[in-house]
Length: 112
Image (cartoon, rainbow, N blue to C red; front, top):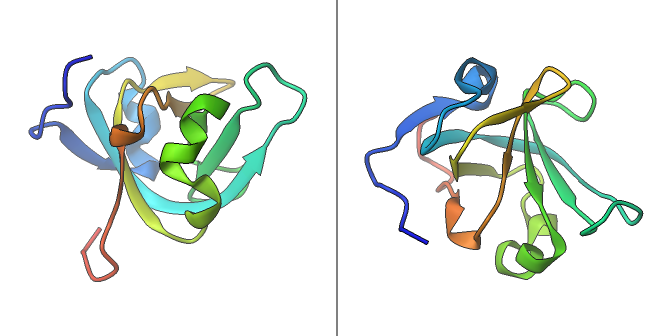
């Protein structure tokens, strides 16, 4: 898979819904909550940005095979940026993590 371009546009989690359908987009925000599903195929983990589910602005979906490279439980309350294709589900913006390199932690003193 090709590396993600450094020139991808950056948007906040509250702007993510305006970019549904766009590829190579970077969304940055604070992870409000981390949730897991033990019953859905692939046992997905959800990073909810802005607010907790169901009021989140943006969600990153991480399947079991990517979880170790990301350590999602360490991300609650942290600022991160994720790059990829923005899709929509039930009126909310989301992104599927295909590889751990899509997600980057933001240093604490970095402006939004």
